[in-house]
Image (cartoon, rainbow, N blue to C red; front, side, top):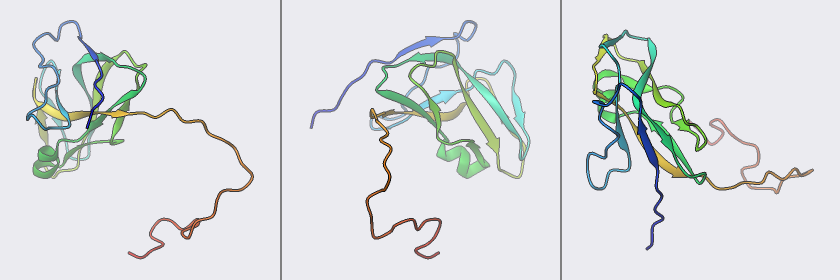
Length: 151
């Protein structure tokens, strides 16, 4: 099976040269871990949300998007997760990648410089043409949704 390979350019944000670039933590990992580019520790209180910088920007081909997702360990152990998950980094965005974190846990959580805070997964984005029609094709399910098949 032949897999597509894409080059994605990455640029450090000025003043953040010590921040680790995104990296896979194992050979078969699908996501790249992202690190906090905070100048001083950030305390995230229960229920609080903050936008955390990562110290880099991307340039990727239009066939790709980068999705920002939670790290499972932070979610399980501390209740730290990403809002609007997965967050989307569009191919034409050139600003610093930032991660919107929320603390769903019971205790304050401290985010230190270079701490792993989220992961980034690249996905293919198909080219879609929306075609307006008068009627849609019928299916057995029809318009049933939001739990229509049971609990």
